[in-house]
Length: 209
Image (cartoon, rainbow, N blue to C red):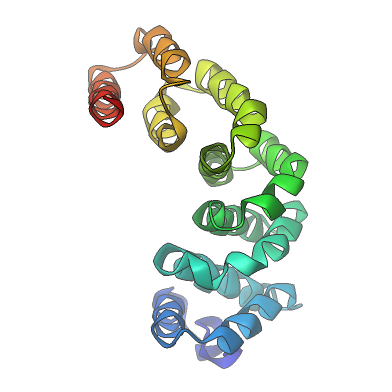
């Protein structure tokens, strides 16, 4: 499988990696996927980078095919290679609702990446945390206050997108806290950002009533 990666083909674009991910999904090639996972530890940085691209592309299409590798992705959150860090968090965001227990066991690692990671890492960590909240009331009790605190303090331009990511775990028990924070943040948002928040609020009211 590694010979089909973009770097192995002498390519500088991502198309071969995306096409490989699509083939692995179509064929449900678990052996091939395992080989790609093994490539994450390759000494050649280009191979490792292409492997994480293939894996999170698989996660976008068939998250069930990579759910068992949560611990492999978590281990990479401490990598010095930022491509592997944000790529792994992207993969974890795809599978958090399929393998929540392994991810929750490593919550401190997720939160460390959230606190110190790149923009893409932070974005996807919000999805990971929201999905954990959605699958367990125990996880919700622990994590949801962190998400509310994040919404209170994140940059105004991040509020709409992160509110949308968090909205997947909003229910009748926590919607008031969620809406209260959004109301507080609106005064700092542009008209287009406010419109995006208001659209989200309407959607929530419709779904919960």
